[in-house]
Length: 206
Image (cartoon, rainbow, N blue to C red; front, side, top):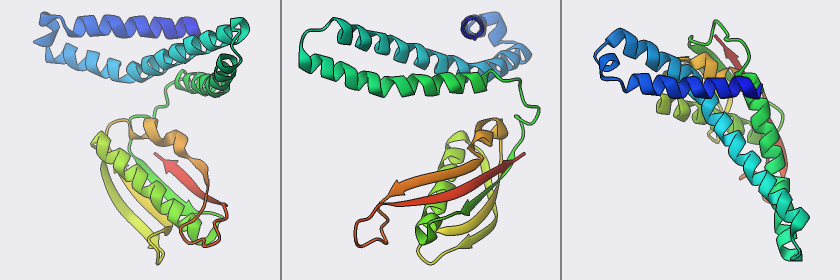
């Protein structure tokens, strides 16, 4: 996997060099093809570089833990290891997913459905927050969002909402959002300060 990632990183560097070539800059077709290819592989390169950075930090923390004499420094190193190991594993899993064969639907827009799950009114509030988050993300990407169905609650939450999102590579960026999302927190509606677990389901269809 890592040899393939190194090849992709090298390809991105070569594409950027070509993109800066004055002859390419005046050729709209070549410029468009290079920009499109970079847009496809640059996210993989960015995550790969994040992975290597975390890996380097983790190796340093492990060396400090093994060789250090100061108990306080060793404790700090262990805390850093505990933080970095799951981050490294999460980045590795993300890279594995990103290297999967290209989905023919990746270029398409989506129909996104958010439903409140278990958790009563707090779940409805959480579903509303998810919907607004997807709306802000879509806005940052320049995508067009159209609400086709919504069922709101009295406190600003939603029981269900369906939206259409149109733009460049929408499905490729949102398809992994499908599934159950959970949150643990003290609800604004809870007077006793107890932590509640609430859930919402998200479906993403091209």
